[in-house]
Image (cartoon, rainbow over all chains, first blue to last red; front, side, top):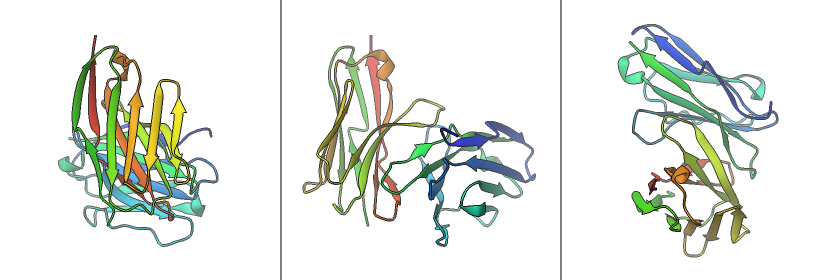
Length: 112
Length: 111
């Protein structure tokens, strides 16, 4: 597609449930980022994929968070046993090195 | 370790004034620099991308300059409009494609 696509756009889940957030990057983009942004706060780095290299997971806040990128394309961010503090907008961005980053519209996650 | 600073943190101007937003960084070994705009509750929209070999980029009322030797980039927005109200973020990319964001400048343009 022409842009970075994220789904779902909104997700309401009960505390303790698992959720999966999906990111479809721009075709051919080798780099992919996940960020989250809590209400009124700045961007918080979560994880970075670059080509076939091992991902940089240093931003994942706990072992309840994991992410994978299949075939160097689609990425899924999984949050297990969701907590209320996980409520935020989750943003995905992709890039071909040197071309600048394009962000998706985000997934707004609300844990009730 | 790269540090990116944006000054001021917030800015309020009357419509029609020119906006000057600053971004400074500590490590000049950057691959490119990107300016983004974020509206409340929305994602990030890319405004301008400056490659490390370039000195400036222009798009409409927007002009961004890059001075790697002094570790600075400036975003100019001419003849501001209320629709320019948003948070503006600068982000640096290294040769591995890793991003480093500034904290942003929150801009309010009053009619």
